Image 1 (cartoon, helix red, strand yellow):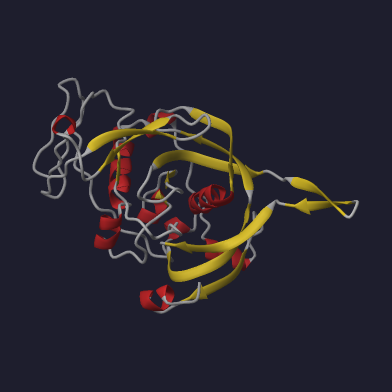
Image 2 (image 1 turned 180 degrees about the vertical axis):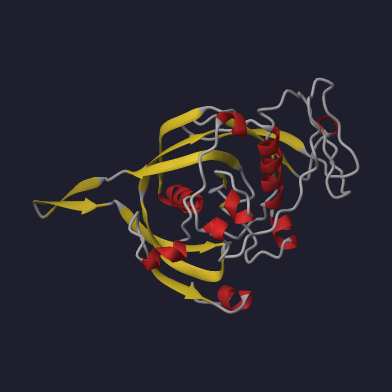
Length: 286
């Protein structure tokens, strides 16, 4: 999903190392030395902390060297970690975008193949790499694995902006929360339904377009984190809830543009506007 706020660039490198036996993994990417430092961010509620590497500044004691020429690993490692690679987006008509993705087993989630896939996804969602891949938008609030032709039930979640935290989500699901407010006006009690709201959405899988999409305002979510821990009962609202629904839709084989086609398992896209070029999209009335 495209990030709706475009004022800042992304400088996020998510360290997906919770399933590793290593204490330190040094990687090098694209023959460019990036000086990074570790920052631990904590998502609110019961969600665990997720480490990040933020570029480009770091003190000497915090240096981690990144280059494509070599890397190091603990002598206890049973596998070799490869440098992350740039992923390319699937086309809007590709079948992988229109069929549900099966849930992953815990062994698959913590397996070497998945760890490499997640590293590739985190690398590819950075604005610099989105530009290199010639994607239709500059930044993202999230991205599902099948948008990159990967048949895994994973998405990246960064609703606060692609210059902030990136959370890796496995086997996501949600259900709506219906809320009502009793408002007293002129001595009369009025019930106002807050179950859904409408807002514009854009999507990397539906290039040069936007839609006005009705989504649930409040949802209860479940997922498995990168440590293999199951989370249930957490709640999201408004923009975060919208991003979660959008990305989960992807893994269920649904594009927001399809919701005009009579899909009845959730709120609908009330209007859809397509453009021929990126310039037309960027210059359309907001």
